[in-house]
Image (cartoon, rainbow, N blue to C red; front, side, top):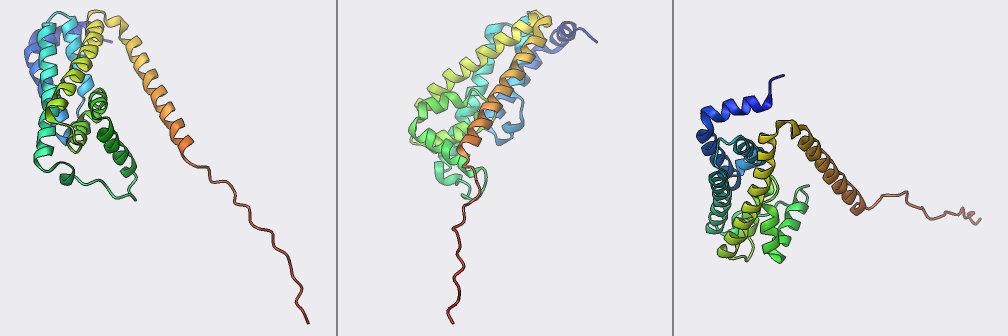
Length: 218
């Protein structure tokens, strides 16, 4: 099995600047385009953090590029959605569709708590793509969204760069981070599953009314 640290050293020594540029493009597209749902934004920042931990990329430069790309993509998506008419440009799915409940709850959350929702949505994959569009459909001003989103992007990038740089500088700790990530995902999924089952009413057997045989009169 090849040494992970040696592989990263070779990769960073050959194409570290290109890797940083490509990572910026991925983060920009993840927030700005709907195709961002399938782009590995979190993994991209972790890889850049690993290269930072090897000393091949300046951490300040990496952080600035990552934050500007991620937040710039989100702000672009917000402006495009707002320019196309906000809520009227992307109607919610019909109530009979399975995803309609989640989308409607998310939109109500942005309408009521736009600041908190804008920050929280940038911290998780998938919501970084839909979050700016839901915020644009709410009464939230662009300047407020831009400030909240920039702060969230800075927090998200900083956490992942620290984790990635730690792994890059100490490749032996990678299995522990992977195990922690898998455990956190399992706990999150389990909590969500329990909550969904708690909200679902149990369909127990229905008690039928007793019937009595009435003799027919002659």
